[in-house]
Amino acid sequence: MRTRRWNTHRPGRGWIARTIGLILTNPRYTGRQVWNRQTTKGHGAGGRAGGRGSGVVRSNSVKEWEVSGQFAHAPLVDETTFIAVQRVRAARPTKTGETRRYALARAGGVW
Image 1 (cartoon, rainbow, N blue to C red):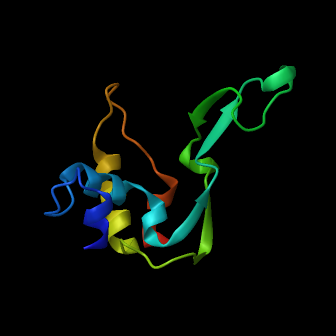
Image 2: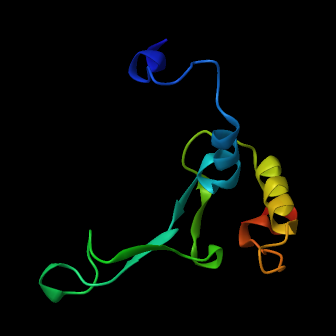
């Protein structure tokens, strides 16, 4: 197996639960392209703002993400499963007791 040769540190028996959990929470695995999930805020070299490698990388809110309407590649997770997982995650209370609302988990699964 080709992958096994390059990833000798992996046991090769399959994915671990954490990996599956990350796949089920990342909209990229639905086959769509996703932009603007993170932003860099700070100062670059020479005091100029922005640019690669400058400042602190921060996650943008889900509302700020841009998701392609068309498939960019073959999906690993179907949209129905992805949306169901987002609803389960959103229903869990946060540390402050609030519930999450994800824009990508809208009713009907239309982004």
